[in-house]
Amino acid sequence: MKTSPADKQAFQNMVPGVITAAGFLGDDTRSLERIIEEDGMFFDELGLDFDAVADRLEELQRRGEAGLGEPITVGELLVQSGDARGMLPCPWGDGFFHKNAVSVRPVGIPPESCLEGEDMLVYSELSVHMLRVHHFCQGRGSPFRLEPSLIKRLLF
Amino acid sequence: MNPILVGPLAVAGISTVLALIIAVLDKLLNNYGEVEISINGGEKKLKVKGGMPLLHTLAAENIFVPSACGGRGTCGACKCKVITDVGPHLPTEMPFMSQREIEGHIHLACQVKVRKNLEIELPRELFSIKKYKCHVEKIHNLTHDIKEVRFALDEGEIDFVSGQYVQLVVPPYGEIKESVQRAYSMSSVPSDTKHVELLIRLVPGGIATTYVHKFLKEGDAVELVGPFGEFRVHDTPAAMICVAGGSGMAPFKSIFYSLHETGAFPEKEIWYFFGARTSKDMFYLDALRELEATWPRFHFVAALSEPSPEEHWQGEAGLITEVLDRYLQTKVPKDTRGWEGYLCGSPGMINACINVMKKNGIAEDRIYYDKFA
Image 1 (cartoon, chains in turn brown, red):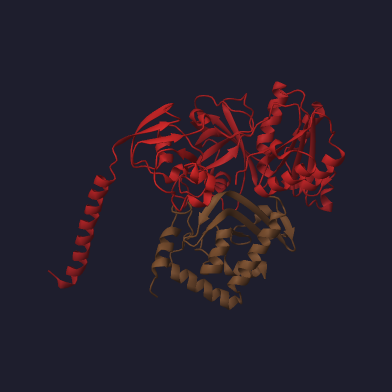
Image 2 (cartoon, each protein chain N blue to C red; image 1 turned 30 degrees about the vertical axis):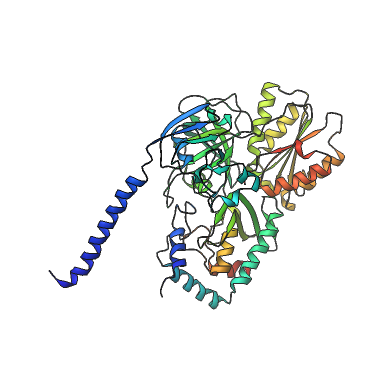
């Protein structure tokens, strides 16, 4: 697959130190196209829809905000919605998004034994935008990766 | 020569020549030589080498403008007035600028490259900000996600006012290849000039908090920059209505113990509302209750938003805003000295508390807070 100039620029913006210190690719060595293509296949296999997942994540963020910075129970989930100072541009250059971090984990697992990426989803407004518009879940090992199987297990 | 090698060698050769040309041009075109930065109408004049962003140029001269993103233009904290015409604002600056700021020549110091003599304005307080070398003396787990970290200064003393914050310089670690800085309120008292104590809550995915919680050890050397911030006790007789959650406890711990120690503002009554989800998320409960028992003007109200029956929680229950509202309506005495609000927490919590306080008669200009977001 030929890389579009927009994807090429976005990939350059995703490496550590450009937009964020950690970047968006984690320790994933795949190309951007492959990450998007393979996660798209996982979404299809799991019966997930990008818009529906993005809607659900935004809904949880809104409900988490009612906790005023502390975790709050939403059904079977514990949601914590926090903010950081500033805004982040999308690596594709199509918008700026408030820096924030929303964590979603099962109520039943004690917080101290919850592992990021295994039991707990962590995302931001930018994560949701990249998921909805660019179908990009972030690279494996990225702290904000939206792992399709975890999305399915926790949210649907 | 093997014809198969000709192509790659030609490409490599051309690339090398191009790289050399770029390097030479960069040296020639981006050599701005020595330039002068005049601060506050000449109150301070710096002779510096041009070519670097203003934020880094000032830091190299030991003038530390607050910044939480290391100069990537994503935190919007390093605003300063650049009187010299440096051209239009960059697209990276625009999300952080109001029309008034644009018209007032406010820029992000990290996005202004020092290419010529500059005239700028900075708050005078920034001149007294220093970088402190220190080491971690003690790390104490307050809850599963909040650590109390006590730093000992290796040299010098820190002079600050309770309520102010420092920036923790997080060195490269793990996959993080560059240093970042994050702001944390000091929880230690100003009289302890050789130490700084911070309360740091683990933020999932957070670079600085992950470093503190998973990498930082007692004995490690770190740097702190500060003190910054305007959050402090105001010299009025009004009762202080203080509200916090989580690591928002930090500035209040400093304020209360300092007031207790010095006896300052003796006419002020102090009400402290602290919220957590469950008793496992609550900390300093015994110490604050002891303080309340021995200090008549201090009143402590702890509240849990989701206590379980097994916890047998005896204190207040509900969101901290609901508890605050109840107390302001029925328990906190209303007298002629009035009330003023002090808040530390997430923007959502601060906004919700401001609404409750305004509803209960506290004027917005008497509600003080440091929004870290």
